[in-house]
Image (cartoon, rainbow, N blue to C red; front, side, top):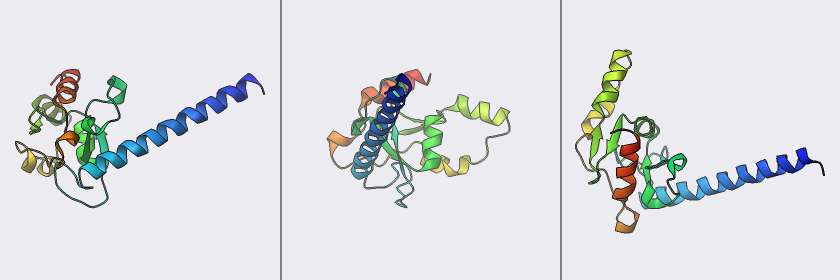
Length: 144
């Protein structure tokens, strides 16, 4: 077996391990949230398991670092348009909204505004609820 084949096998194994890890994380988070968006409460099988503190920033694949979100809310969360405070209240990042509006890309806020200032729908079991340390570190990294 040549070096190229070994490297290719290693890459495939890493990708398979990542995919399996992601699937387990998604299932555990979605189950904890009752397969509904933590913000909207909608349960349409159109949900994602989002990391509060991204894996790229050292966030672990554990339920307390996850939140179940619809794809739109997931993108808004990942792009720091919306964020959680340590009491799990949904907040708006005014600076991010101003930047979007300056680019004439601020439309669609009517989908988000009704949920601002409210606590998200939390898992029933406290040990599955977002950990304040992950929220705090994620907000620091996003400069919120």
